[in-house]
Length: 170
Ligand code: ZN
Image 1 (cartoon, helix red, strand yellow):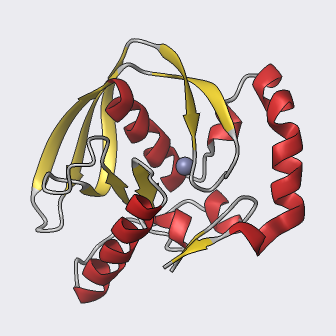
Image 2 (cartoon, helix red, strand yellow):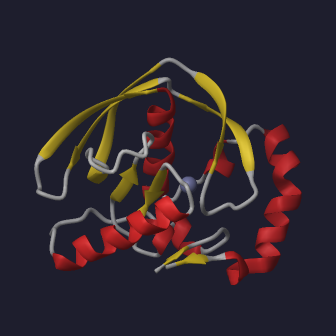
Image 3 (cartoon, protein in one colour):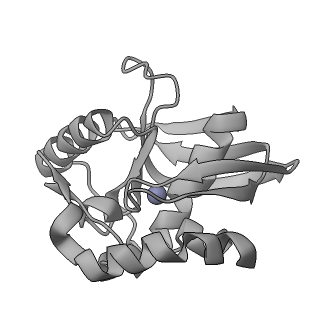
């Protein structure tokens, strides 16, 4: 399993709902976890490992014991606005300020199929919005201001040239 890097087309697909939690899902989630912690990320969406389903891993406390796997997640409420820097494991070397809601409320399922209600703030809320965007093929470059997009364009061009050269794998 690899982390897919921009401009791979899977990052632009709308991911499908996950309808069955089976052994394959558990195995893939385990590999995704390994990749995310290895890359020191706080979130990873399934399309970023070339798996086009609605599943994300979010862990902004590096606390592996808490609930970190969210299936078919939906944000149902957003409040506030914060403009802060963020990055993406699919865009090595690119960082930019992005406006996000400060607080979110979401619904999702865990790996046991139990329905969860999540309230997140600050970095966790940012991670939720960033990772859920991935499920719809929306990338953080789409949310950059024109000035930030321009400032990032050398790095983006480099990624477009490199293509699969910068993948991280386990
Ligand atoms: Zn990302």
